[in-house]
Image (cartoon, rainbow, N blue to C red; front, side, top):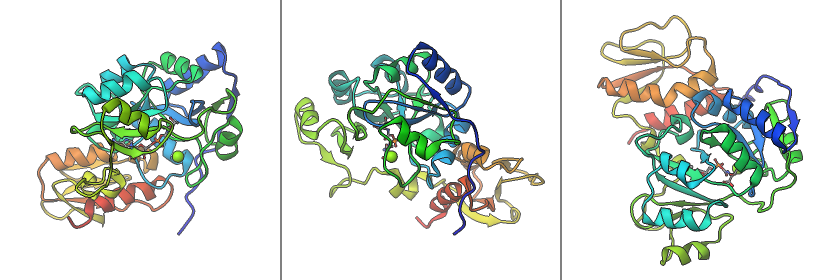
Length: 326
Ligand code: TXA
Ligand code: MG
């Protein structure tokens, strides 16, 4: 398997966690840049969650092979409630543990502004209000949800200091906001509140017992007998349109919709992931384009071949899941 090419090299600034550093980090994020930010759990590799192309940059910088949904960070419960629908359990957990190392997966609200790519096309959204004062100030200044997985290259240990983040990501991101080592050191606990009984998706900074104390019953483990696994990576159907998908196609057959990539692919019932053949642009368009083509009601969506390199590997992974027999 070939090595994905590195994202274009850029100068990574080291910012101090004062008013100037935070303002500069916020401006970079609002402009679509990538900034490693401190939270109380781990350093996060942050991007504007509302921008598909900014979010695609996270995957490129991390060399993350697949589009897992990302956690969106907010400064407070009020802003989180604009993005997601909180049932009684979610509200109680948020009131007790926010700000803090708890992530809640809730149904996305009708007005949710988190991009399809950050949500991996799911109808839910993962929300977190971190306790770190620098993260809080930055989120206030950005004024939009901020997507942030751990600030390390894929497959490596999570970054708990600016030095860790730099070691993995220097030259790939715009800045690191250095506020010293993180306090909690493990990622947030993830609890899904989607359909009644809350489920534990990932153990983390808030212990299970503390959560059970608030909801007044045992947390159902995601994937336990009788419960469908919630980890989207395991669920091909989450990416599967109603139409069949025909991959690595040269051109559409009669009656097929066409999902193109690169120039010179002007067919009826078609959308192009990136005319310029830019994988980052293609990644940010993928779920939205699939959805739009599916809505046209053609039996099959034929898809151009996407290079199996860089973000192409992730795009192809999702396309294969969508094309897998159901
Ligand atoms: O402590 C943390 O949570 C760190 C810091 C930076 O805040 N962030 C972090 O984010 O670990 P991230 O994006 O790597 O976490 C992604 C996890 C994955 O396990 C993913 O499957 C789950 O969150 N997740 C996100 N959205 C989900 C959703 N809608 N449904 C189910 N799981 C979801
Ligand atoms: Mg991680």
